[in-house]
Image 1 (tube, rainbow over the protein chains, first blue to last red):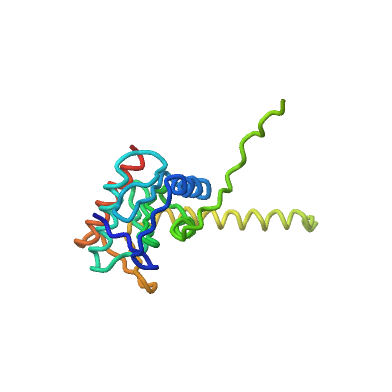
Image 2 (tube, rainbow over the protein chains, first blue to last red):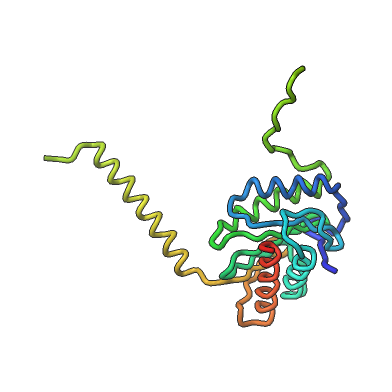
Length: 139
Length: 70
């Protein structure tokens, strides 16, 4: 089980699935180098993801490895490998994990992750800035 | 004959672009894999791949990357 208490403490946030999906969509929209991301709940369960499989287990293991490195809960993690870059951010009992192309601008990815997760954890909802669909035809 | 002013400006802009391109190429060539963890209060720590914590982080990161690509 992963610990997901973030900078604002271990309070248990429980966003609706639609909000978590909106957070993932917003993250994908903002970060062009993103290969995939997922929002994990307080117990490490996957609330939403861009696709792929095994986010819950892999994300929890990633956060556990970060916590075990210094025996202290991590608030952000960035690991750059030959195959891509892995990120994790915690806030308000939630966590977001993401994978981006190699040599991505890490500070921008982390900033976007923090912004989206903070909105989600605050309970105020993630702003929906997606382009509106076509207007329904009259008549 | 001295070059026209707009030629000087174009040359300068292309030289800046060349510099930026060279910087990015150098960054790609010299950047090694790394793991960095941030803690509450703004403290951060780097873990080398040769350490136990670094190995665990790189292994977990590669599994996360696999999850994204699946």
